[in-house]
Image 1: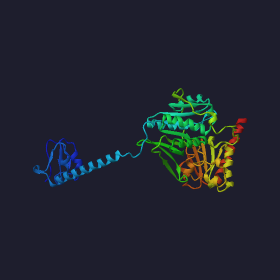
Image 2: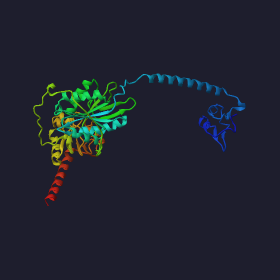
Image 3: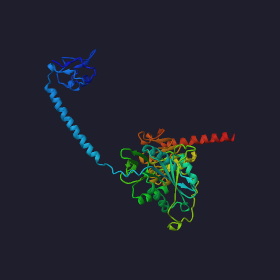
Image 4: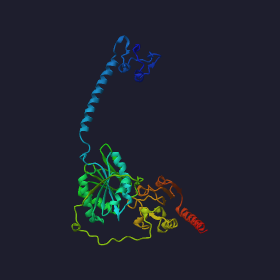
Length: 437
């Protein structure tokens, strides 16, 4: 015996997909049954939209009744689950702030009337975050006679600029700058506020966060948005650089973070782009300040600054000792490059802390980066991963640095680096001969 299929069948194929015994197929005008395979389980009857399938003599099998009972039970369970989920959803997983907190703000650090590169880098990344959230991107600019910088901020992505221009802000003092930033934040309520992790940015961000009673993630290297809960995801290496930790500020606003220089890239400026200027005043006089600036002494050095270098030659513990590390300095001298070092090399006393590249050192993004005798731990690579070209030299073919490099050389640095120096000397000599000729 087998099920019967009447002429009202519309050849939808639902029964064929459902049959667990492959007893049905589509014929020329309707579904057909293979009698030898059909066990009259009734699965096809339940799904037929036109009631074209019946058991012999129109009877309903025990299997059909059992299927119906199971279906009713499953539906009841599903409804129960839905009710449970609905109740869970009623409970807020995250205590979100009032919707009056909106917008992404960047503290615009300027020195002697010039915007620091990290501020322009943050405007580029802030633009992405603001677009993702569907809000405005704003710059907060403090100083004295700095109004000429406003148009530049528009060109680099800012929709609005909050400007406080006052003689009391001519030189950076955390006490004065804190008052200015805190006042505008309280008045306009941004949901995100970012600072560059510079000497000034780190100092100011911590005092502002303390005054506002909100959280601050320091020295972040990655930013993103959790759109479900509208949370800033600020990530940074942790546990000695062995893992990346993503830190959230769930309940307080604004969400604050300081970001390492050279981590992000500034967008290409749009000439003629305009925005909105909001000028505010600071409720502070010079006599109110405890700190007085007597003199500003500029550092003078012939040494190439690590963060500004186009070429960096960096060495690690694979160079064995201070004498081995001298190869790094020799190659850097030949290339007119800055010297970099891993944390191990610095801790061993082969290099100065100012030469350290990485999470606890300087973040760099040169055009050319040599990583020599460096294993490639995340604590180091997070500080140089935005380099345009990376040349790695290491004896260990499995060294992590090879995952980050453009060109990798497996071999002994004590054999390879001297050859590099020799070849670069030849190129320099030929270049000199050409220029003199």
